[in-house]
Amino acid sequence: MKTNLRLKVVTDAERQMAAILNQLGLTPTAKDRAKPTNNHRGSLEVIRGSIADTHPELLRGEDIQRTEFRLPDLAELELEEGDKL
Image (cartoon, rainbow, N blue to C red; front, side, top):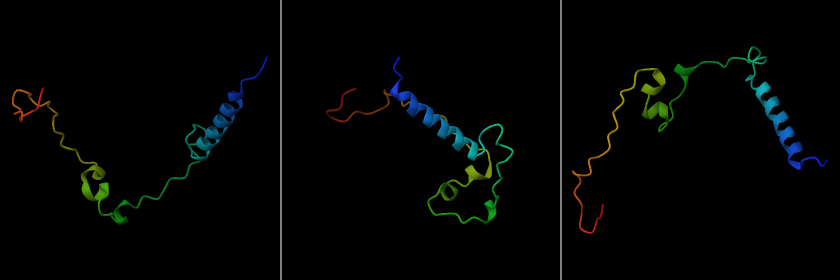
């Protein structure tokens, strides 16, 4: 029986992915060995235009006011000349 040529590619990719997950500490056995990062949120510089600049409430853990999405009422829309529904 002839072996599938794609089998070697898939097994190599799976082996590489497993090694990467292990190095990142994303496996059950490696999660205890992963080193925590330093948490210096208060001392970081806010970059203009970033999420921290435009929406700081998202990073403070505050409740966000959400607006309800409603579809527009097509009867209320005014058509301009040449427009079709």
